[in-house]
Image (tube, rainbow, N blue to C red; front, side, top):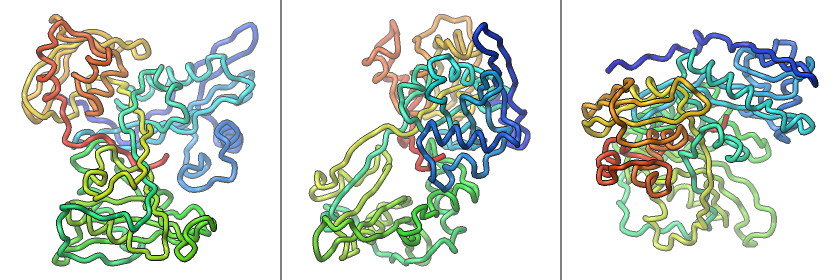
Length: 428
């Protein structure tokens, strides 16, 4: 209903350039030139301490100068900033997003407002490019929450002895798991699309994200990335990607291997159980590591002894609604309803003010409003609410949403409800 469609990445206009002069230094905010790529890489590696790291997360790999927006002080590059032109699932709908990356300021040039200059300029650029959402992995969440980003996708890490993967009351898989490799990328892509389709945060993966990300061993000494595919009646129902390596010598003497489960996407409970049983069936392993499982991953509730997972939770993807009208108009809604809210946004002035959301149980449309708002919230709270990471009730209880109608909180909960918690397994 009236959603403004984002431009494809190849039509994204180049970032704007701005320049200010102070008594101390001349400050310029602009994309780098091709000949400045090496300097960009040096500054990024220096600020993030990533010298020697490869893979898709290498800022020198595949990054185009026009995707950067950096700060120069007296002609010298001091702050790096860039964004990949991604598409993402947004409660079951495709939306274009800016995947912010390679953000850093040289240590001796910090506390001078350089990041604020780049961030503020970038928000305007994303709006012009019809990228209404920005996402990022944060070295420190505190840096970005002050710019309106919300932690929307905390994740779980497991470290478990494979022999403790014992399911209780789970379905008995009737299909089979077969071991293959990246040559069956088309099968993986099809399964990934089916898994990602109804969710929020899953990126639309091109070959670079597959080959330089989850299918890249990174550490060549770790061996290949193994691909396990679960099938029933010849139909693929899920896959797991994992690596194996010898341990460090401190584990169990006769089974000192480590299995690292990089990704597991299952379309059915049977596929989920079968794939976990497969990765746990390595008799020489005493350690099974699973990084960045979704926060709503069901494993904890399916095991006979879940505490043996040693599960830990930490933040992962942060999201910022940059342009509220297309962001909320693109997103599908759980049921029909209408709500008016006041948005406070001290970074993106075009978002400020009262808005009315009208949803018909499938689509929604957000328009400017003169009606009295039902509730008031800031950009960070709205990002958490619209992504499905937090309910209106949760936000009200923590002081992130203000309303004179608390009796309506449950209605707003249902309106913004998502079937799955947000999750983004890709690094960028």
